[in-house]
Length: 311
Image 1: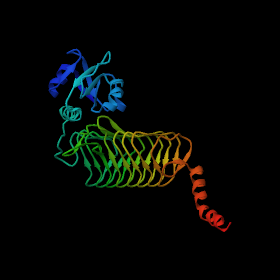
Image 2: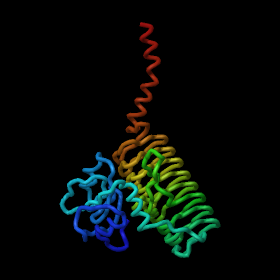
Image 3: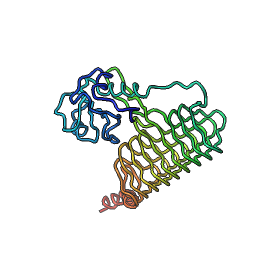
Image 4: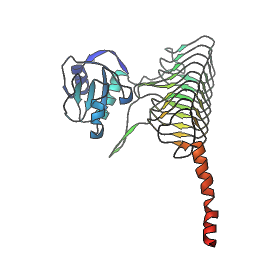
């Protein structure tokens, strides 16, 4: 998320009430999660295991819970609770805006787009031309929809990220202030849920088709011309390259990549990145031919044991 104007390190420290390391006028232009940070961004880190990764990423300001040596060309914000302070910045720069009507007056809707009854369209939503949004769909604030998009009934775009910190008193929610971007010629089936990014965008690429009851997690990027069948669950921060096919009930863990043209057979569990251009099956996932051969070999075990007993 980029700020509306450049802030100084001192200004950010005053918003949070924390100390800092760096020049008073050190420029801060936005805030993001570590996988999407750019020069000028703030990134937060609250565990020693990830200090080095945060200090050496593209972000130039690190919100951290320990005073450490500051890398050259960067600045630090020293916080007792970086998670909570990151939330404070989200609420400061993009506070929740209550809706007072079913279709916001700030929404922009393109020519020949049809909005069926009981559709909710939030603040600052943009919808392109020749779209069809069926009854009871919900498009939360900031969603961007391209041209020729079809969204079936009951689908929800822009719900909060499933991102929590476990504290003694319960789970603390990381505030979501990103959005969902749906490119041209996408179709979204009935009852799908697409979470917005924490600070960036969850993106569905041009020409991709989602079946019914598909879940897409925060900050996930799905490429062009993908097919995703019913009841697939895709976690956050996943990259799915172009022309990937996921058949029914495939589960995908967070922060992995699925290569271009991969085909994943039904009920597969993907717990690691997989290369493109191959067909996969099973949990844990393997190339389908290899996995099916293993399963066939397992079926032979009883007869092999029986023969051994007879010897």
